[in-house]
Image (tube, rainbow, N blue to C red; front, top):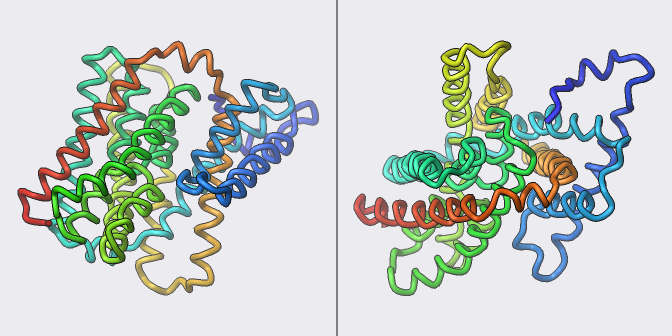
Amino acid sequence: MTDTTLSDLVHADKTTPSIWPGLALAAMIAALAFALRYLPGVGMLSPLILAILLGMALRNTLGTPEVAKTGLAISMRPVLRAGIILMGLQLTLGQVAAVGWVGVAVIALSLVLTFGFTTWLGRVLGVDAKLTQLIAAGTSICGASAVIATNTVARGRDEDVAYAVACVTIFGSLSMILLPLAENWLTLGPRGFGLWTGASIHEVAQVVAAAFQRGEEAGQFGTIAKLTRVMMLAPMILCLGAFAARRHQGQGGGGKAPIPWFVFGFIAMVGVASTGWVPQAVLDPATAVTQFLLAMALAAMGLETDLRKLAAAGGRPALLGAAAWVFIMGVSLALIILTGAA
């Protein structure tokens, strides 16, 4: 992934390629991803997932135009970070309070244990460390959004991002089917089942689809639990950035280790949303803009993803994603039962 910055491009001479073709291409794919959601059977996939799939399809059939490269680099960095910052407006501290301290503890512990387990198993299986980190983040936090946010620190290949997104898409979709079926035997109750979906399923859309199958109360609580889990993205990214910096210094590397400054913007937006001063007439468009910017970033990553390189990773990362998926479902359910949160 290129290190080109927006400032560099704005002040470049006339021989520098324009950013607009790439930005336009990413935006068109993102718009198409939003439109496709209205087709029967496609609505279960978020625009983020559809965007990377469309980008990959174009890249591996027609190819990515050379003239678009510079703009795609912008989509994968400044545009992505702007989307993550705006994501903070969708979350409030009041949502955390609604889940309760036991629910928050279940979510946080499930997240930490899953991330640690996935990291450990990735080393055992011999999966690349950066890809392991992306799969761990996507599984333990919030799916595709966590994958692309974590990659600002991990700096994995675009193929790593695509592989991790594929894992959270496949296994999260399976959770939408399996968790409601499992509830027929578990009888957790609406709040317990909602907490289980919010603490274990990868994508917000997948949580909504699963939780509301067991009624309105389960759906509402599952959504709030999931948004609480999304809020934990900020401290996780900051911790990963701190570990990366320490590792970088320990290895005596030149230059600077990545510092995710944009996460402070995310935290600031959570604070703004928590005041209750932002009218719904502003929050609704901001949510749409957030999703569109993140879809642009994933479209750009898809346009840079070579399926041959993706296939070269083999089956071990898929096994890692499956194991992480099973682990987070099991550990979150166990914690819900043990704490009496059901």
